[in-house]
Length: 167
Image (cartoon, rainbow, N blue to C red):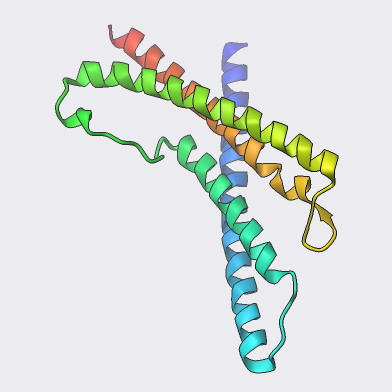
C-alpha cells in the first residue's frame, strides 16, 4: 500500500513538473512572438494591437509566478547565504529547516492577503484587456504563493526527516 501511494505521489510530482515546464516555455515563447509582432506592426505598418502591451505585462506576471514555483520546486530560489561558509555543516542543516519553515509561513501570509485582494477585485469588477475580469488573470498570485508555501513545507519536512535519519 505504501509503495503504491509513493508511486502515485512520484507520478503526480513528475506531472506537476512537466506542466510547470510546459507553461514556462509556452509563456516565454508567446511573449517573444507577441513582442516581436508588436514591434514589426508598429515599425513597418504604423499600427499594432491595443491590448498587446497590457497582455505582455500580464504574461510577465504569470512567467514570474510560475518561474518562482519552479525555482522553489528545485530548491533553487534566491537565498541570502552568508553564514553557510562560516558555520559547521550540522548547524547549517538545522538552520535551513528553520528558514524554510519561516519562508513557508511568509508565503502563506502573502497567499492569504493576495486572495483577499482578489476578492476585492471580484467585488469591484475590475477589468483588464478591455473586458476581461481582472481576477481571472490575477488569480496566479495567491495560487503561486500557496504552492510555494507548500513546497517550502515539503523542503523543511524533507530536511528534518533526513536530519533525523542521520542522527
